[in-house]
Length: 158
Image (tube, rainbow, N blue to C red):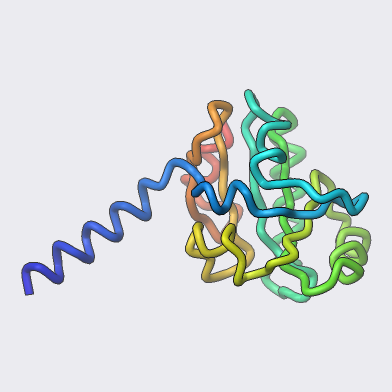
């Protein structure tokens, strides 16, 4: 029984302390709005030295759509933060229509591997929307939030 408790605590602590993306996640290929294939690592490199807010969403996700105006408000309140939107839509057409329909302003990318890809697996994705924050040094400063008013999320953006 003690072994089980120690194991659970270890796994929980390890997940909560994740400060970097796995090599597999960094190498996964995404698509830009212009249909350019780019690795997640290359995306992050573009914003090195800046705080990056990551929103993992999909146009079919009701919670994502309800949260989008709140995310856009955060964007307005944090003009020095890069807002990176990663879509789990099944088709690029749905993703691009969702960007327009819901006024998604920021850097938009499509994850063709979806939930089953290395990126989503490595971050233990179990719900969307999922918010993450990467600090200017490129470390994950917020591993998981599902609400825009999460106290830790707001601290990570400052």
